[in-house]
Image 1 (tube, rainbow, N blue to C red):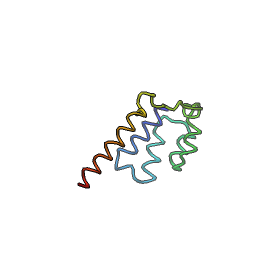
Image 2: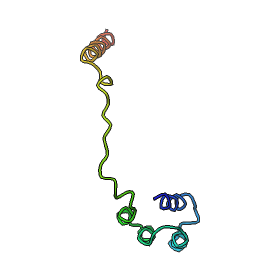
Image 3: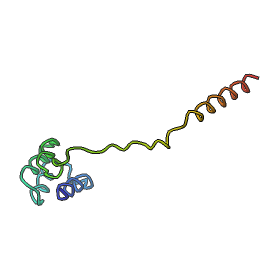
Image 4: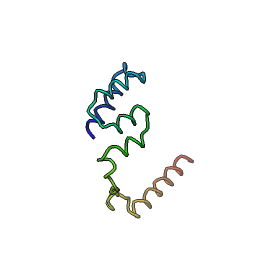
Length: 93
């Protein structure tokens, strides 16, 4: 997979690789498999994912949930609304 990433990185960073012929030449000289080459030349992301073994092995990920300590407590919420009301009253005077 790192070889595919290297090719994609080269394409993104080299302004001379803006034509289909230049991309085809880069891909032809790269050490990636035929399916990956065809997918890059065809600009087919789904085919590139299917032809890259490591990506297809990823089945799930674990979402990161904030800790309970990160959420404001109920007493903090009440204080915030009281402070806001005090500020509004002060502004109205």
